Amino acid sequence: MANARGFVAVNEEECKGCDLCVTACPVDVLHLAQHFNTHGYNPSEYDGDGCTGCGVCFYACPEPGALTVFKNWEESRHKYLNPNGEGVTSLTLKDPIKGLAVIEATGEIIALSNFLNLKFAE
Amino acid sequence: MSTKILSKSEGFYDVYDRRPGTDKDTTHYCPGCGHGILHKLIAEALTDFGVKDNAIIISPVGCSVFAYYYFSAGNLQAAHGRAPAVATGVKRSLPESIVISYQGDGDLAAIGGNEILHAANRGEAISVFFVNNAIYGMTGGQMAPTTLIGQKTTTTPYGRTVANEGYPIKMSEIIASLTAPVYVERVMMADTKSISNTRRAVRKAIKNQVEKKGFSFVEVLSTCPTGWKMTAPQAEEWIKTTLAQHFPLGVLKDISGDVEPLNLDHHLLPTDRIGKAINLPEADADQPKFVIPDTVNEEIKISGFGGQGVLSLGVWLSEFGMREGLNVSWIPSYGPEMRGGTAHCHVKLANRPIGSPLVVHPTILVATNRPSLEKFEKEVIPGGKIFWDNSLMDITPSRTDIIRYPVPATEIANQLGNTKTANVVMLGVITGVSEFLDENIVRRTLPQIFKKKHLLDINMQAFNKGLEVAASLKRIA
Ligand SMILES: Cc1ncc(C[n+]2csc(CCOP(=O)(O)OP(=O)(O)O)c2C)c(N)n1
Ligand code: SF4
Ligand code: SF4
Ligand code: SF4
Image 1 (cartoon, rainbow over the protein chains, first blue to last red):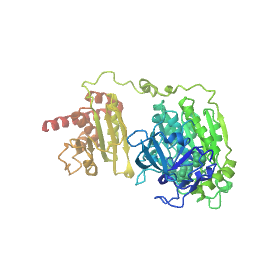
Image 2 (tube, chains in turn brown, orange):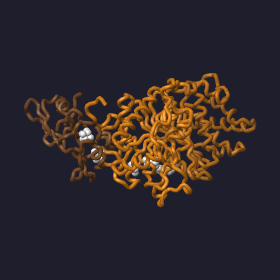
Image 3 (spheres, rainbow over the protein chains, first blue to last red):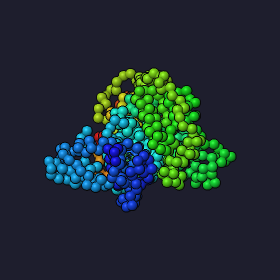
């Protein structure tokens, strides 16, 4: 999609499945998952493509830590710090829906992580 | 919104350690509850304006009673409806802090209706966020003063009627009719546009305070999906189609652009003028004869039957402490046993500022009846002092790690001809054996306590007897 420069990450365990982000998203790229989180809610899920990074879902959501919106994902993802605090050379999303990332430093895969646990250099 | 990543605000704790149980990551609010959205807007604004570490959020009674689990700021939780009164005290004593009164409609418009009106009328320089969800959420969906006509709640099962419950109260209109408030607006959180508008209003109300503009009030129409028995999207829809039709949105008053920044220091009455202002007799000019140690930190519990003067003894001790230039506090505890049973009071005397006035581990226990000694003996710190009236009880303290002062106070008082002077005998003993009380100050103050001459004479005798007992007890020790 032409405008898909954004990215939205759902912290499943902090989501209460209230549906507000789903109804709010102007380009309809969020949906509630079929599965349950450990609290028994169907968490919100990103379709994996099409997010414009508008931030609407972030402000619609009542849970402080459920959603993270990257307005410019291409730029942001290069600024991640690996757990040692070093910049990573590449970060590719293995599973964009769950936010699993493959983090590479100088060509070597050093971690597979939920990127919400990573630090970001701004 | 210049930031390139929208994520959990620094205005929230990373982990909600104060939340009991195993889940320390999510709020306690129901799915889709408006409180969470408003929390996010407030946390973001406090962070963006760089004032979160300087902010004190007063949470109410209602679903947001636990706001202090979440906000990484100063937090206080007030009694039901009293957040504006607490906010007044905080703002006046800390004029540079950013004080937020966060309240629901039951809290602000029902039980606290009086508090908010007067805080607004005084023009306290605080920011009030009023969450109007037209219901009592926390207690299970009862009618609120803002419940709409016809709206079904657990206490209006057939719908609210004008005849029975009156009209929904429009707090913003009432507040806006007052002279002092500088900014009053009603907003809603029901879709992207209205949430963004609420964000603007929240920031304005906080900005006003940063700029010392005066009282700001934002009423937020907010979802309660649980109380309304709706899904969260339905609840947002109901705000738009129904609630906002009865509570018109918009700015009701805004003079924030026209007013000069307030001089908030004028609220603080300089301590040297307090005595004059309330017509207190001039305090003694001369210095205490002995030097008050700069490490005074006494926590005193005085307990006995109602009528033995234990509460008065506490008041006097704090009075003397004040005259010595110490910080003092005194609170009584009557309990249900006001008549006949045990009454006690908590007294603190210290060089350092006193936080809570409650005495949990006394350095000194004065017990004038048996139940008091039995009840409080175990609380005394090791090395603490226990004074007990041994003419009234046949037991003695069982602890060996405390200093013991048996005082036949009632017997001496009876010999003097007035049982009621027993507490002054006790005062004499405490004065005689303690390092924080100056005998001369006590002597000079007693005439102001006992204004009638015959009472003064007998109490002076009682005091002297107490000093004698102290001297003999000291010899034994
Ligand atoms: C002195 C006192 N009276 C009554 C209550 C019971 N009570 C607890 S919360 C509440 C009302 C809450 O409603 P609201 O202020 O609208 O907040 P919400 O829960 O809807 O956010 C009441 C009456 C109480 N806790 N204390
Ligand atoms: S940021 Fe905008 S486009 Fe992306 S998921 Fe959220 S609402 Fe949809
Ligand atoms: S709005 Fe927040 S809590 Fe509700 S479903 Fe979306 S992410 Fe989950
Ligand atoms: S009862 Fe209503 S106000 Fe309270 S947390 Fe649930 S949805 Fe929110």
